[in-house]
Length: 228
Ligand code: ADP
Ligand code: ADP
Image 1 (cartoon, helix red, strand yellow):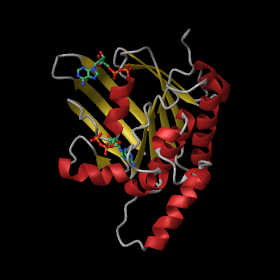
Image 2 (tube, protein in one colour):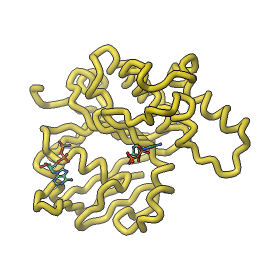
Image 3 (spheres, helix red, strand yellow):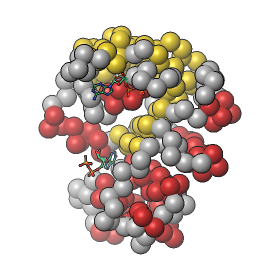
Image 4 (cartoon, rainbow, N blue to C red):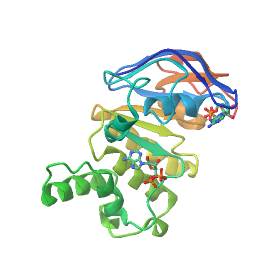
């Protein structure tokens, strides 16, 4: 569960990116975050994995108040929240297998168990046959699939994605969204910021619209609601 109460964020340069946000996202929901550029979508999402701290307010994620979480505990949090970025952020010198294994929390796991987990998630994203490839040998869609495999390898309750289809063509984007739906079907909460009007309008999930740092719309089977 994710819950924000009276969340404000002012960046050091004085920009008010979030201006009083209240929201509850239940375990297992699939949520799109939409709104114009500069509205505060990324800041909203970054709050959920403590990439940014609120200036004031509370953010509860799986029972932990991230506003108060010690910096030393952030890496632990990150292993329990999968994050997917527009630009994939794969490590270029590691192959597909290594990129996913690298993110795996290896405490008390045998090499055999690690291999099983990594291969399971690569199978789920349809990339078992590319385990030995390097990121620069993959298409954009394949790289995003690897980054999704990395985000779920620790079986997080929540996967957060910031414009995951922003660099992909329409057909590839659909494949990525179908993959998120498959992950959501297993009970994982998905929160995805997106500008993809076609996908939002076709899939009719919960839509949270942000403008000028405020939630201006929150609908259970929402639409994109903007022209582009
Ligand atoms: P969106 O994701 O909707 O485009 P952002 O959350 O990235 O919006 O940005 C909201 C506002 O905060 C914008 O005015 C942006 O320029 C500003 N902003 C974002 N990140 C920073 C930062 N690190 N420092 C200062 N201002 C920022
Ligand atoms: P950085 O670019 O911050 O020096 P890395 O190159 O190691 O760090 O990783 C690139 C980005 O990907 C970082 O922001 C890191 O937090 C993020 N990252 C790596 N693995 C995961 C993961 N499993 N879930 C979420 N984010 C991850």
